[in-house]
Image 1 (tube, rainbow, N blue to C red):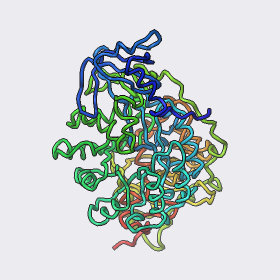
Image 2 (image 1 turned 90 degrees about the vertical axis):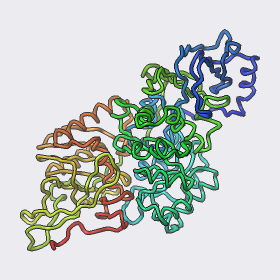
Image 3 (image 1 turned 90 degrees about the horizontal axis):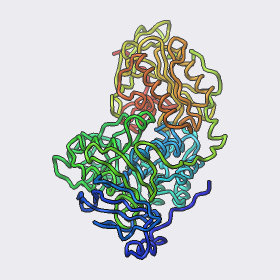
Image 4 (image 1 turned 180 degrees about the vertical axis):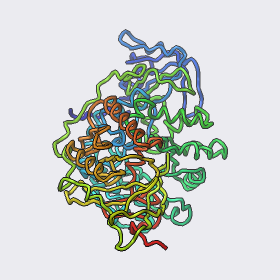
Length: 600
């Protein structure tokens, strides 16, 4: 399907003026609703909206003069007319879906604009993968704006990716029609220390007049934070407490507060507005990472807005944070984010402003969902074979690949252990005294084994370490080719035989997630595109993901959305301790450390 640009405001101005003046009939009129005006923060009853050429032509108490014989009339019946919701920072790949299927999943929830950073596929397929995501995004009936990934690898020297993104790649992408800016600048030490590559990427983005996304995953709000802000990132979503949110907006950044499948960072930061009284126009809501089960069962940006309201935020303020604030941040205030003349006609009809039921969704002037059902097509790309053949292990793995040899003569050893934190992206750097059995170090109690299996270049490399916090019991293993951000393969298990079975199974199916226990596969989510996504319908993927969650529980894991913690264990830009293909990484110092230490 060839991309056809959505007509611009200047291109449609004559028609919009003619409809607003009453000289021509509107394509659609929504009649008798409560106009949620996010510019003035008002809910104005008894208003109509007239739409022409996919844009708002008129909003006022009476649009009857805009109605002609061919005009589609929708009776709002006193419901709220709300701007379509915007997700300011997200990764489509985290939904385990292609852009088309992700759009199909979120449209019924009222999301009409997304700002996506496809840095997951960039690590696997490079600029070609970004282009595929960008192209399918432009085909959708809603607005999917793409941020050019900035950091592949996320931390040079500490991990090896399938491909690297260069400053030249960034400069090239800035000319693509759907590129809205630079994706999250995760290499914050690189910015702080004036790494030429990072600064070149930022400069290319700024010279193109586009927005630089931020990612400052450090609690240090001193000189390092000041240096990072001076480098150019315009927003940040890694804050976890009120002080983080306040520091960001005081320095001219937008504070993006996220509620994803496993990240619960809104409640701890929104008090900067609800209690400290800071200007809410500099705060933005986003999801960052939502897997398919959350999208199908719980919602998307409507879920985030409802959560913000439940945390004490005024509903109109929460809606600003999910509409006009986002549009303004990306320079699109004259295009999306409000129900006002000239803007794209992205409108939700809802009977309640607090519980926010999404009853009708209109995008670009057409009804795209009614009462939870999508009413339009979401076109697919023909994904090439290269994108479907990305798991290369080099050889069939066995239990010996997952052995951790003990120092000679020792009975027990001190190990550096990754500590999982529920509902948080950061981990803890723990130490645990572990037993040695027949010359091999073994997990004990809460501590089980983790391995990073190289899957891009068929090196056969396996990095072994330990992790704590999942609560797994019995002989089991869980493997995933979703392993932010390098996206090798993460295997976590209590038994090396099960770990080998799980890893080999993912090589067989071309990527995804699997769980084995006692030699039996309990769950499998096939993700054949880059080992990250499926182009099957979201409901089918969600059903398999739900079985995965049930299997994790059956193996003893009771953490909320523990899969998200599993998939981030290789993310070497978020403290404290991570695993990569090059070893164990202390992200507090950005240095590799030894797995084992002698007992004191």
